[in-house]
Length: 145
Image (cartoon, rainbow, N blue to C red):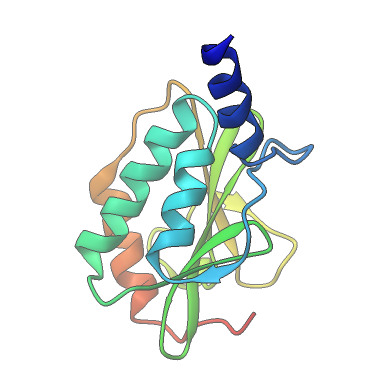
């Protein structure tokens, strides 16, 4: 009986997943809400989220982090340059000024200037390419959201 109570309490404290598969995390500034989001990403996506977060931190150590609209954001003083979102079948990185990156990230957006990269479960993570995009994105003006 005791173990059942602990399991129920743990399940009650787990963030809910939205219909898209994205964790529902309270908004907040700083690293803590981003780490809570990453921990709440289901299954293999949490590992991808952790690796992407580490790439950003290594590439741009002065990164500013926040969670808004259930989305981790990465930026600097003048705005945001990157976001992460968890879907049922993939994790998506959003480069706010993606059309200014070389090479341009592969997935187009309806939002002018924005480009995406999607990571599925068995995809290889090209850390050097992602780090290069992060480096380039951090040199561009940030987006106000």
